[in-house]
Amino acid sequence: MSTQRTREAITDGVITAKVRAALDEDSMTASYDIHVTTLAGIVELSGFVGTDVVRIEALHVTEHVRGVLRVQDLLDVRSLD
Image (cartoon, rainbow, N blue to C red; front, side):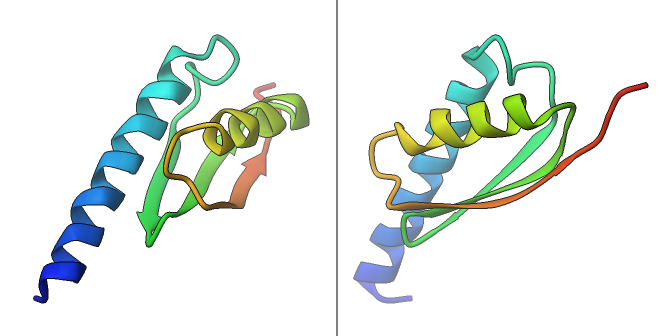
């Protein structure tokens, strides 16, 4: 693995950890199991949330994490009824 690829992998891991922490600290998103993966600064969110409001909040929280270049939304909205 090249030095640049190693650096990107470490950076992506840090971004993933920061996004997970931010989602866990947010009162709207904390109770949902949102999966976070990062590749070259592009963060992918997947999993299930209860409402569109929570989905939008998760995207907003993620966009404001330092190092995030773009967010891909693969979240599925499902009512918890």
